[in-house]
Amino acid sequence: MAFRLVLGYHSRMAKARFEWDPEKDRENQLKRGVGFALAQFASADSQRVIAEDTSHSAREQRYFCFGEVGGGILTVRFTYRQGVIRIFGAGYWRRGKQLYERENQIHG
Image 1 (tube, rainbow, N blue to C red):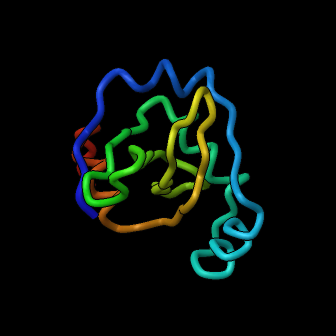
Image 2: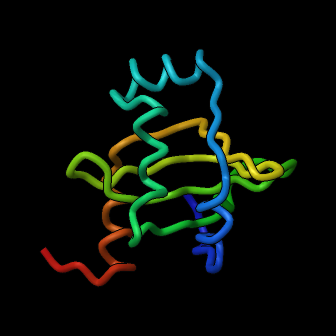
């Protein structure tokens, strides 16, 4: 996972709607135990961190949202298309939690 932090993305996310492929959602639930209906709430965390995925698709920009959901830090992979956030992956990953804590200066 290679990424670059994105500043100024928060206002766009506040007005966007969410969508996802139902089959990808089922696959993600089976593999990672997280549904995309829950994953969208990572963007509601006022301390969320947004990063651009610099190691993926050359055709469109992809992003990560790191936000607190259900007592843990959830990493949500998404793309942004004309006012729509399309989720295509989510999970509680250690590296996402570490980045979130570092950016919010949380010390455990």
